[in-house]
Amino acid sequence: MTPSMSLEWRSGAATDAGRVRTDNQDAFLDRPEAGLWAVADGMGGHQGGGAASRMIVERLSSMGAASLLGVAADSASAIVADINHRLIEEAALSGGGIMGSTLVLILAVGDHCVLLWAGDSRAYRLRDGGLLQLTTDHTQVQEMVDQGLLAPEEAEHHPLSNVLVRAVGGEIDLVLDRRIEALRGGDRYLLCSDGLDKELTSDRIAEILARAEPPEATAQSLVEAACEAGGHDNVTALVVDFSSFGS
Image 1 (tube, rainbow, N blue to C red):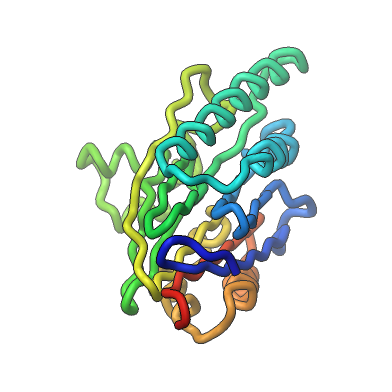
Image 2: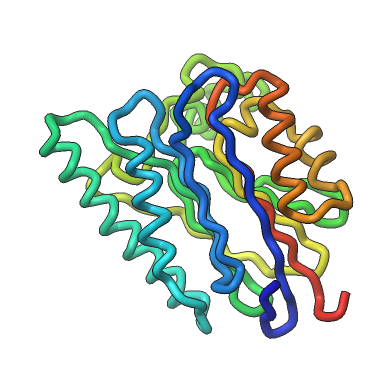
């Protein structure tokens, strides 16, 4: 449990290779003492996906607790930009192809947090019983939805749903999307790889998040539910609870 200006937080995570794949290319960072959490999903089917996700987590883990949210976000972005170039260079040296990973992270300072992401790993917030997806997938299908070429309900099972248009290691000039949120006591945040939301509906995710369980138990319940629903991909869930002091 880590104190801030007006809130405190606790967190927990779980990950699994799933029921189909033998290796787990997901990686996560759970550092409540620094107000830093991240999930990275190595790009399945590409060389070095697991190495890419682990590199992201290991480099970000060097960050200390921040006092200014904007400065912390800029520092994290700079670290990811450097990793991005390294992954592109390593892929070129090994004969081409892609060595990449998605990324979604939360940095919390005081009663605000910033989300940074690239790819289709997601962040959700459960507040007063309502679930809100805070990130937008960087996929070809999502672009089609944004352009009005595809209905949202058609996107989930579209054959191009796994085609990413942005990822760490995917392009030289990587831009992380950024979103700042005001935190409230009672908020529960979820970071997850697409192995979770591809298996579970939003209603199912909300139902599990709403259980009166500690973050680690909730994360484990989410991962187990995704595996039971098919487990076609690696799955990772990281849950962060924010509460007022003394609550």
